[in-house]
Length: 200
Image (cartoon, rainbow, N blue to C red; front, side):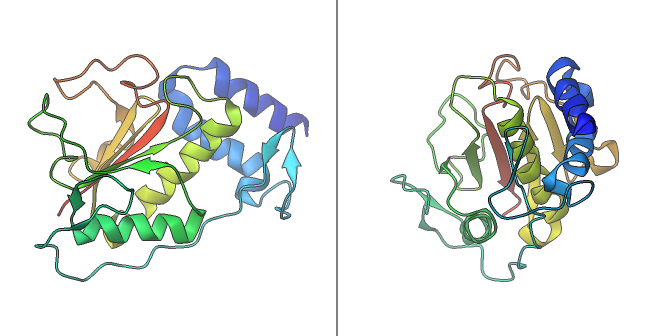
């Protein structure tokens, strides 16, 4: 119990650069990792929910050239690859609030109007997450990273950090806004949502 409390304090106190590694440490010390404390359905640890280890995603091998209705409920359409990712997250984590297609007229490089990106809300938009939601966000972000090949993931952004296929050797590096957005604050810094883009 003391170990979990120490890691929770570190998650709040240390800078963003340490968060990915600390999230793993938090999971190992809490029900999330099935380590020190076994995961029991409905259990909590110091107010944090039991986060069982998520299973692997099913690979997508279909046609990505057509457009399908956005499963997140917008008026746009997305690629079948992204629709598959959406259903795999639903199957693994249950329903998660998300928005995929969006016009995003201010950024010509955005994957949202191309139907190749989703934003998954963690906590409440416009606010920084509490330790429980931070752990939930990292669980989703790490799961996306671990299943990047199966789900054709291009990059993931969460908590001011970005991981991409093209620069995978660098791990979770600082997110700078890509030259179009500021990278500070809960929304622009991606502290209130996990962004995921697919390659096709």
